[in-house]
Image (cartoon, rainbow, N blue to C red; front, side, top):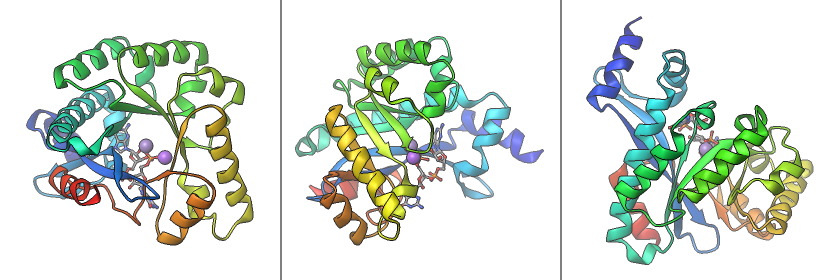
Length: 256
Ligand code: G
Ligand code: G
Ligand code: MN
Ligand code: NA
């Protein structure tokens, strides 16, 4: 398969890079942080989205390399932005850990080194995990998450509401952030059930001292409903899609 050979080379040639989707303060519009999302600049096919290469990368055993690449690039980029935009305050950048990455040896050591090499302040690199990652072996995941946090990363639980996390574990795991899955956000203006779920997740977050980020904020009406539900942060196409680094910096600068 041509794409398979290309993908192996892509890592070596530096064709894979993070794009950055702003996560904004819904009240002020200021950028609070970014989510780094992988893009492949294929020399012939152009920009290849992750849905078209993550499965292949997984089959080829390249997910750990992808995670390292994304964490390293995003951390360096974030350190540059923090240096140039002191008014951005506690700007963070999150990177998605792939399923299984949380169980690999040396993850904590790698994260420690990446944060130190980039010179990032505590919590600036945020790692997003999904419920699926945790539920495989919860006590082991709990230990790794604790060590990642001690290493200076902050932690987000991604796609919250789509899995079957036990709330007991949620209270015990050292998360900083809950990300409400976009399905609930996108439908909260039409579906009373979704609106109620969003409100309960926001309340749960407040009770557990977690920041809550709404995904899928596609328009101003949803942003308004989220603010009414006391949700303070959001990301979605209503603000921006994932942007190349330079455009993300322009967006950041103009939002402050
Ligand atoms: O960016 P986009 O909306 O096309 O992403 C599609 C899917 O790919 C999402 O589920 C997203 O979480 C995932 N994804 C994007 N970048 C990365 C990455 O760097 N690592 C992992 N593990 N998943 C990613
Ligand atoms: O949660 P996850 O890491 O899968 O989220 C990243 C994915 O969500 C990316 O594929 C990104 O392109 C997508 N995304 C971001 N904002 C929006 C939005 O407002 N609407 C929709 N439909 N997808 C979005
Ligand atoms: Mn995510
Ligand atoms: Na998500």
